[in-house]
Amino acid sequence: MILAASAVKTLAREAGIFRASLYRTWGHLKDEFEKRRAAAWAAGQQPAPCEARITRLRDLNQRRAGKLARTHTELTQLKERQRLLLSVLAAKDDELQRLRRELSTLSCTSLAPVPKQQEDASTGVLPMHRT
Image 1: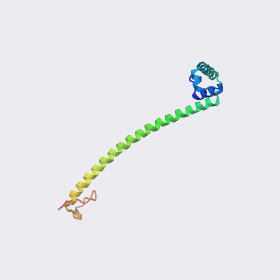
Image 2: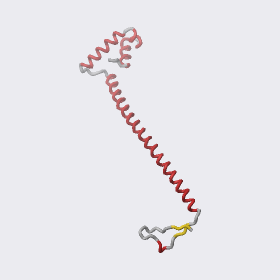
Image 3: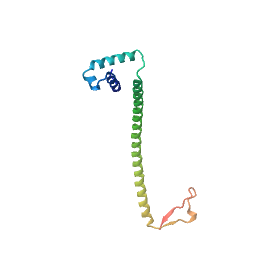
Image 4: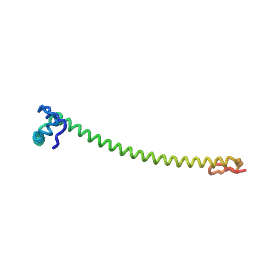
């Protein structure tokens, strides 16, 4: 079991030594502390308040990491959709420009409506003839 940094700090403070000394000189005491702590956990004893907080914060961190991963996936999908829609929009703009050019070439010639009696009865549209 790996001793949490806050537990090492607390152990060193309680022993009246520096944390680095706990690792270098008193490593066997740190190991004994870890064994006893693991045995207490196995026996179902309540952890110290800082341990409960660490566990709670670790769980919160995992949930937030999962949410971040889901948000990142959604953002990636939205960026791909935006890229696709922009390409569709560019194609539509190209088509619109082409149709405007065609219209401008047609407007150079005068168009005269066909007399009323030749109106297409099925659509109600007057055919246009060039003159």
